Image 1: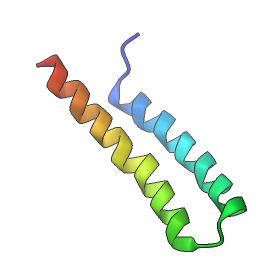
Image 2: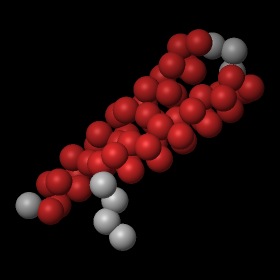
Image 3: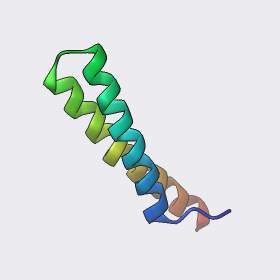
Length: 57
C-alpha cells in the first residue's frame, strides 16, 4: 500500500494529539507539550516524506 503525503501527515497529526494529551497527564510543563506536538506532528512526517522521495528517485 502506497502512503500519500496527506495520509502520513494525518496519521502523524492524530498520533501527535494523542501523545500531547498523554504528556499532559505525565508532565506539567507547557514547553514539553509543545515540543511533543511539533516534533511528532510536523518534524517526523517531514523527515519521513523526504526520506521516501529520496529513496524513490
